[in-house]
Image (cartoon, rainbow, N blue to C red; front, top):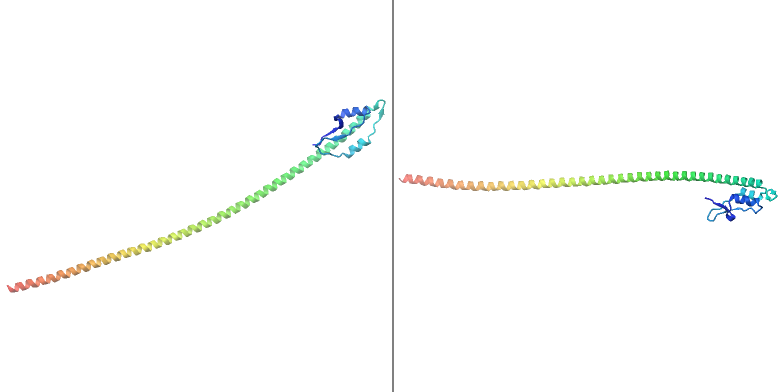
Length: 198
């Protein structure tokens, strides 16, 4: 905000009184640490202002009229500055809103890109997992098939060994029967010989 004061710290009424009393008119100055603003029409008005003289200095009515004109000029300038500030404020708000909308759009685009990337990564992981599961299943099927072959071999070996054992036992039984048959024949022959001798 621009702040203005008069040299000596006097108010507008004090300045009017000073003019009526014939004292030099004091120009407004910018307060320290504020931005200086040029009002050419006001400066020219004050510089070229001529007050009507009276018996005891300047005429009060003329002074008040000039001060009223000066006040209107200040009010007009103040209104212009307020309008300008409002316009700048609207422009800043509009620009800020555009920046916010642009930021929202960028965030939405980044969010969509991240979502798409996440979906692609998820798809890659799923395909990798499915491939690993398929490979593990195929390996398991191969192991089951190998185990079945091994079991079949062991069963065949056991059956062959059992068949060989049975064959050996049958051979032994057959040999034993032949020996018994030979003894029976010898015994029968002996009995026949003994019967003939009697």
